[in-house]
Image (cartoon, rainbow, N blue to C red; front, top):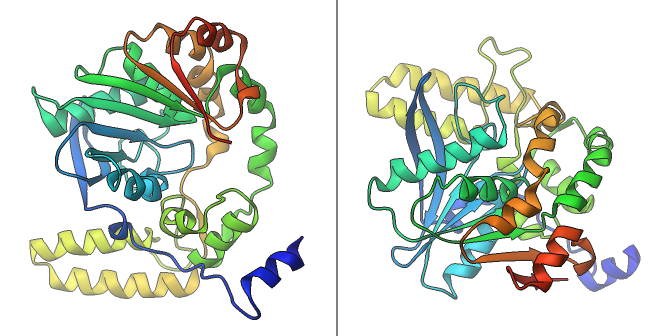
Length: 321
């Protein structure tokens, strides 16, 4: 019960919903430039570790690379590996010309392009790990052979049958979310209390990747998120345009006072791609010719194809209730 929970917390002890920086969990951050027909796209990655295989992490729909922050700290302390967590297109701090195109094919190509841009002709051994939408993209990337040095594939809590069934209720879930939040703290608090993020520590570092400040209602230029503002200020410093920099800071201060936060991506608008992410996924996963791991929250989530594949020993399965 709620009162029981309050008692355990101790009298008058309030939970801290303030945001925490990515730098508490990752060692570095990089904007990887990828050339394509329409010009340059930049993909935000967060990294940790200096040797061993690379765990390339792909987040779920609406989330961002920061959703892997707590996982990164935990795995780096246990295993010698390198972490590369990627903001997929349309998400987080990644900037692409066509952020509306969230097809499985396009996003899988993005993953291959980022690996190539980061490592050139000699990529290290890579394990692709994806959650939900990211799991689907990991499978599409693998089956199209877009990452040549792939060691293994891990899909977290995504099963075609369950996902296809869940898509029907997805729009209702999205409609039920608040449209705006008055502050980052407010967004973090909502995410935990609504059960969208179970782990308060994770919510404090990752919600900034899910929400942004609303486009300016009164400020003429509109606003970017605080995080973007800081990064752009650093870039402007390098160019030595002090006055622009100062004005930017003032604009940001105005914006912070006046405008609430909203979701970075309108997931409802991505509906036309959902089917393409998940349809045929189980067999696609089974046909990938590398070691495979399926992490599930419950064994009841297996669909028919995966149940048969599991009986035939085609992949390793781990249930984490």
